[in-house]
Image 1 (cartoon, rainbow, N blue to C red):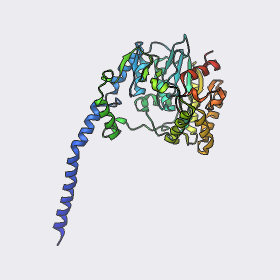
Image 2: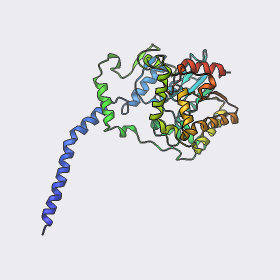
Image 3: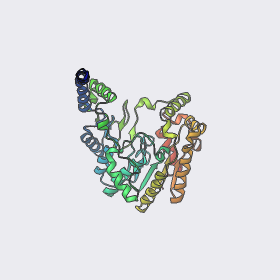
Image 4: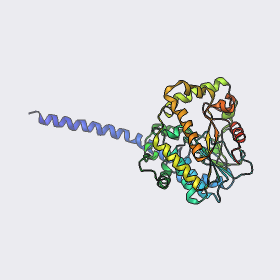
Length: 367
């Protein structure tokens, strides 16, 4: 009978698997410990760092900025504010440069976060609402991907409870967004996070020993988070670009983010946006719908791709919403509407601060 040899073979196979596992255990342990203790994006120690960053900003200083949980910083920053802003800017990185120097004499706060979604807007506005400091004027960026139910990057984990509370206030049915898996678990054994951690650990620059630093500078060769919440991009990014460079940047941006723009408008998100505007109006907030222009080459590629028709449908929808609630609209995805040229852009998606300031002035956004 061959039962015993077969059984022995199975034991041998299990032994080989265990042997391989234990061989890799030190490597896995090294990755985990490096990711956890170096923690380049503050995934495991973010709460303390976010609180410290927020306190620096609300004390009137600026912060040399690196990757961090921007939503968590906003939560602490808003909770440290003493009064309602005259003007609040809420959107993505396309709105981050807009600060108090654009609206002279008015208390201006920028609470924009990278890759802002409608869910982020609900969560951040809930934090303002809970503290009773909703702004007098809200400049609300309305980018097309806000109506994309399949947008892949969801960073709202740290303010998910606030999103849920605002959803309840608006009477939104549960389940319109999924609770994202915490990046703490996703990156526990991530090789890319490990590479970032090793790079940071090997850096010898004195000004990055604490991963961020206090500064009163408003421009430099690094990103600076200004005390009003706005962002000063590195000087290298602000260098004037040729039309050809902007065109290449537009093509690259769309090739990397195509799925963000190839979608159908989500009815649930349109309904939530409608309810949010109605709620804010009842609270006495003067909402301005901001449609940030795209470079001409980016807009041209939208026109040439039938799968990106929702970009234009989104602008039509946002304008119809503004008409319904008698809101002011500032901007258009079409750069020609405001005479924007390639020189007015930093890359394939971000307009220069000066160009945006000109747009707000022309539109007389603040009455």
